[in-house]
Length: 610
Image (cartoon, rainbow, N blue to C red):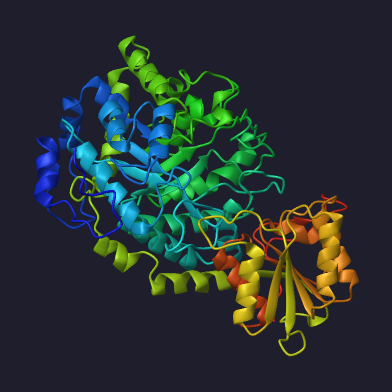
């Protein structure tokens, strides 16, 4: 099959409306009636008729959302073909759709799906074309994790915003709504219609290894307001938002990617702490909710993860909270859902629990056939599948996929990474940087008194397709603001020799900016900052991930929290340091004392200014 929609970065012809209607024969064509983008969804009778015409194999496929390697639906690079053959048993996205009839595809940067906006649009078009040309072909719901901050799959030149905890520090529902509106418009322009964001977890555990700055904060009321605002923004732009990770992943010290966490909250505490943001998302009309691979004994004492728990997903989410939208699992390749049952049982149990979309199983053929067998042997009824498929089709219809499944390069050029969008991201970031310590009013740093600035510190891999490394971005931003700034990467675990090199360089500078990354009591980063302070040069510590670093750095005369090491947040920190903007962020989480974690050093809402 020749694919005119992919495999090129130049302008390609958008498939015509006639092609769409020809490809979506029968009832599907009837659904493709002309009308505004956000017109009321067609009646369920037509969607049910669609379901009734599907074979059992097609129904099973509609429940899966799968990864696939490659920048093109039909002509990926050979390395991606090899990866697809190894992991999925197909060569391309088109073959994946033809063999398994999957209802959704998820994009990842590591799967080479998201090189640049025109390519992403072409890939989306190629996927839709491949699916719609199949017998009884349906449009595909294309999704990704675009949380912003430290988790985003589409990088520059798309607009990248501060992450959730930074937005929590800003505290503006308007900013959260703007973020969702702009980010949603850009995703939709590239053919991505479902975003696995916002994170609705209330992060109350400083040691949380998987959520942390991906959460808006520790106050359930504040988190609820920002979740609802982002949902309104995303869905107002025609992209399905996804609140995650139900019933709440904010109080764990185990990463569900690699282990099986247990949340020990009582039912009463869950109602007060974890439930409110999900209730707010449901009240805001959330299109989809993602499950968590963790155990909550107070909600279900069976020992099953929430993803496989009927008491949690049907009893609480569906029946008690009244949610009737799409429920999607977190990735089925994560250890948290695989530790108790084998990969063939997990998808069947998830459907029995109340799930609608099965995300990214490690072995699609095994999972797909397990569901098929469960229906044929009577463990699952076809009616149970139909209920989930109907929810998925309702969402596809609401998002306009039956009416207009394709996107054009013109829409990409008008929407993605525009000057106005980038400026909005900078303005939002300027309201998030949080000043925690400012002894003797060191900040704002005077360019006349401290013209030469050395930027040292941790340089974790740049997230979200941003520029990086963080020390280089900070030094570049400070140079643009009138300083003579140089960067020296010292890493997250600097050796004695590296620390000595940084100390020697500091003696040739007038001031030092140290980017810190999750400092602990025995961290060499702490030693680095202490020895830099001992030089007598003023030191400004910038926490570029968790804001808790300040508790480990009592010697630093100035401390800022940036909440991430993406360009937009680092540029904002530089502008605050230089006095171009005043710090306005307030802590959305408490910071405990390093020597007594039971005592709060800086409470929620704390933040200095000038």
